[in-house]
Image (cartoon, rainbow over all chains, first blue to last red; front, side, top):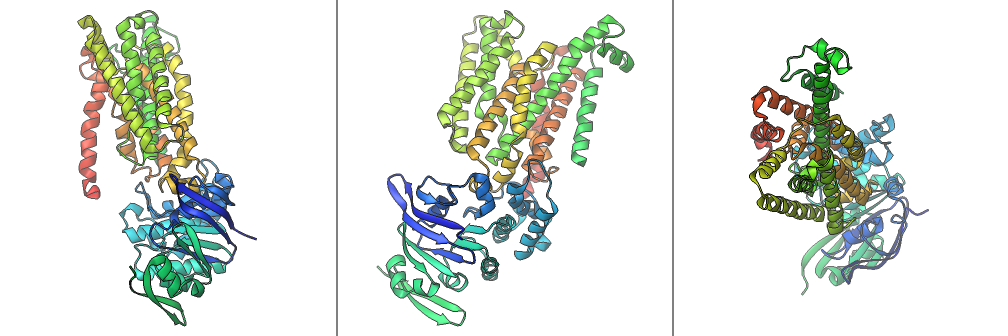
Length: 252
Length: 326
């Protein structure tokens, strides 16, 4: 069983391919980290796989109708937007939208999903607060809770932990790891290589639109690949908690 | 639910006041029986042919503008958006002005609103052509601004070339907006078009709720943005085009009403849609009442009163929310 199957996905910006013939398959139980330097095509790969961009090739998600896709995969965009002064609970409840009939109220199932999402992200005491009045990091957690409330087999997130404090970063990735252990799957782009190595079951390394490496964290986080793709001189230290990447300098 | 009852009571109260307050002093029981065609024939004429269409049109114009304003703000995620933004009202006004200028308006009773409506439809076609059916919201606004500016220029040109001052002043007065001296035939022409527009706009709730999280997130929540945009454009054109054709340019309703009610709707765009529809009706009815109560014999224009009430209200809101904005 697969939750996402992408074959030869190419996304072009003008003539130039920003994602170049990428293929990947994600199954239940996986927490996949998408890493790569700025402009490597991480966001385009994720959006292309969802069918939010014009693409060539095939993607199992993009082939679905918008409604079916919303029940299959939740998507957390990089741009965090909360347009109106709504309470945290109402924002999180927007994740239930694909399951609601027109004009219907939240069913007990919906409410349970919202409560569970709030609890997972540690937002129980924020329910009635106005989401727009929260700090940037807190808003990010609210929006992650919104995707959790969507309760889909696959969660796709674009740099979900950027701008979060260290504890919130670890807590969020722990939530993702737990989701995977529960039999769902997560595909998330990340910039913190150490955290990616520690919490992901698998890493996909993207460089200039191509998938350079795809495998267990320890096989992807090698000094040679980091040098090749990130132009980074780095030491990879093995610890009981997983590899730690210590950047030492920039290669020129 | 509390919000719904409160707005409903307010709107019904304003509607009744609009029926029973006027130049001719008709008591409530007399007015009621006259409304159903009984009693003094003069009163029957006043109630059925003057006050009822006026009150109905005021309410319908208010619903259209309030609904379209809330929808436009929700779609663009901007509290400064208003239904006139996409150029429909400007084009409808241009159509009306041309009808007045050429004398077409005098040929048969509904010539003016029909010309205005055709111009509104033309504007939507032009915007679709400019922005493309799949265009982003930015191209939609820019196309709207272009069409608005062009319509405004042509309106000025028509005034400019107006052969006599009477035609010019007639045009000026029409553009100030009013629901006075309208007949039931106006209601029957506008109602089906507006109803289509209301249905289209009222169906936007889900999509607008999802758009709170941005276009990408909304699409991933199963919303088809291109369909949403078309539905918004069509709904606004029908509702606002018909409103402008009937009552002239009545500003501020679509901007101020959603702004006032947003807090009471807990910020939810879908709740704000119907709340603004009712609120808009109450506000236009109240403004029309004001034109009759203040200076009843000077034919005060609805659009003027609207702006006179709306602008200070808006200032007050800004004053109150400036701490949140800062």
